[in-house]
Image (cartoon, rainbow, N blue to C red; front, top):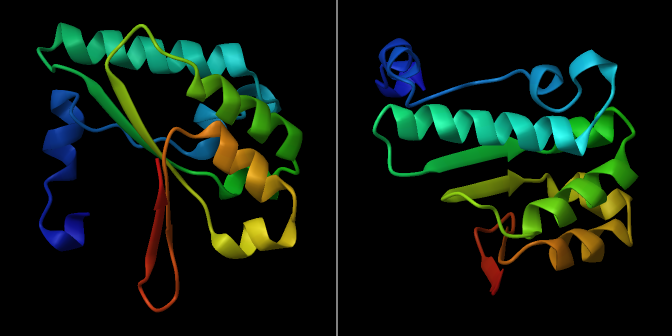
Length: 130
């Protein structure tokens, strides 16, 4: 982001940007816990709105679940995220299509867990489902 001219330090200081290593967000204490992660999202949302922001947006690179061999937990988490929040939260869950291709049936489970899906291909094509 800095290479693109974004003042990351200023955004972090203002509370407009938080960047977490995946272990600090998803696998704190070496284990995944949906209540812990959801609690963190709620805390971050409350902090943001207390600072005057109108909502909260999050993006997560989901490859860490493949790395940690936590695929069952991943599907459970994605389903939990699909339930309505009591807050204004929008999120993007980013997946590498190669990871998904290796896991077969997981692909459909994850698509079903999301309200909308955008799939881009190597040639830049986009397929979306709402």
